Amino acid sequence: MGVGRPEAGPPGIARTLAEADDAARLAAGRPETGRFLHVDSLGMAQLLLGWGRTETFMPAAHTLLTPLRNQPGDLIRTLGTYLDSESSLNETAAVLGVHRNTVATRVARIKTLLGVDLHDRDERLALHLACRAVLLEQPEQTPAGR
Image (cartoon, rainbow, N blue to C red; front, side, top):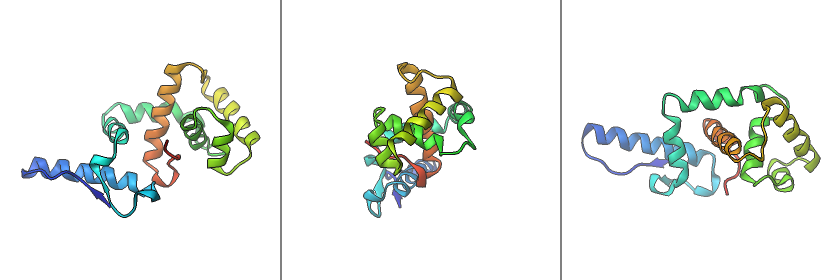
């Protein structure tokens, strides 16, 4: 369950409900949060959720990751977890419950499908934000946070 900040009046109630919805979406993907998650404890995730509400961010995130959709191996989750794990094949494999070589193969496919250089910090940031936003839409697949 998500909890928003107390606000007054109809516009305030709308903000409170939006904050509570954000907190609930994040809590659904994080069993360690317990029964309730207050909006003040969202940290950076709240910023990402706010960006996700803009007219351009989510369409851009989906477009960027389109080549990974409907590919075997859940490549969006793999990429998100790999970036969360600071490019550690071992840590990514442990989080995903697969072999390290499986992760290496998937990352190579991701690079080819997207035509990206994961050493380029701007490309990494864009991909990381896109993965986080898209995976937040599907809380049960949210990569492990750091």
